Image (cartoon, rainbow, N blue to C red; front, side):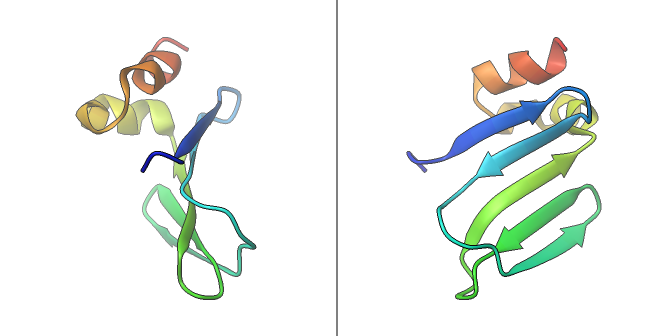
Length: 73
């Protein structure tokens, strides 16, 4: 996933993981994760709500710079 980009919104404690480019056509929420899909079903964006709590529980799955940005906020 070389094209994966991350953005953290400290105010709302939301981590956005941009997986691809395109127009979002559908979204599904499961717990604190909202998955956004194109009309072809390609995953374009993940929004992780309550990101600081989520990353404390799953920090091994994210790059160090993202963990540090969220967990030290």
